Length: 270
Image 1 (cartoon, helix red, strand yellow):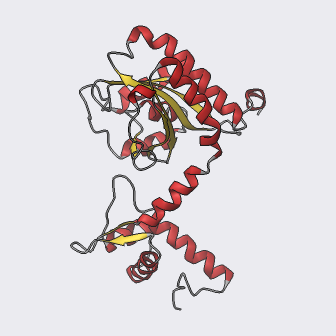
Image 2 (spheres, rainbow, N blue to C red):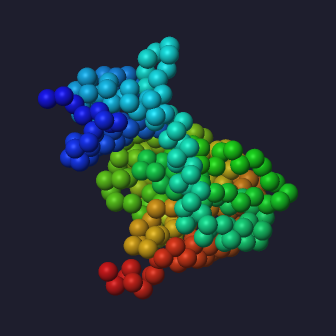
């Protein structure tokens, strides 16, 4: 029996099967496994090598997959980034969050970031900067940052199921600075404190001399999928300012949550 081709399949059942295989192949890549060989992709996707090769060829034609000429290895294509950027630009989250982020940034004179969990790390999808420190926006939505050592990441990770936390840590806990938490035990304790107080702190754990205070954002079902943070120099975001800033960040996160459909009373009744 011949394998269905993405572009030529007419039978609905075979078409669904082809798309499932396509998603299995795309799902083999991550921030850790950015480039993979044919054999590695076939193993991760659980598909025969011949099937994997045909699917990769079809995905490469439409720009979802790229192939390195020197090594022959495969990676995710630019077309996926273009579609992802389009999806992010149309998210209700960004539209609803922008006014609150802008108000918070102007109020405290610091950068405000909005991050979304991608299943492994956190992607910053929006950023508001104080006018005097405005900087280029070319990093918005282009790269996933580790969840275990960033403010927005820990604010989200603290409210995820245990299996999601374990999967995230399985990718490794690289030390970015001397303050980075590099053991599961230390991180679990930090996430516990985050849940108790309602906000996370990145104490120069991802970038030296940079401090963040972040709070979780919930969708209409009450699930934490994003977070908003105040980010700035450790000289300005001091421990003495934490109480004031954390209260403002929590208020901002709660306002955004309500504007995208979260109703605390309904969530509590579930």
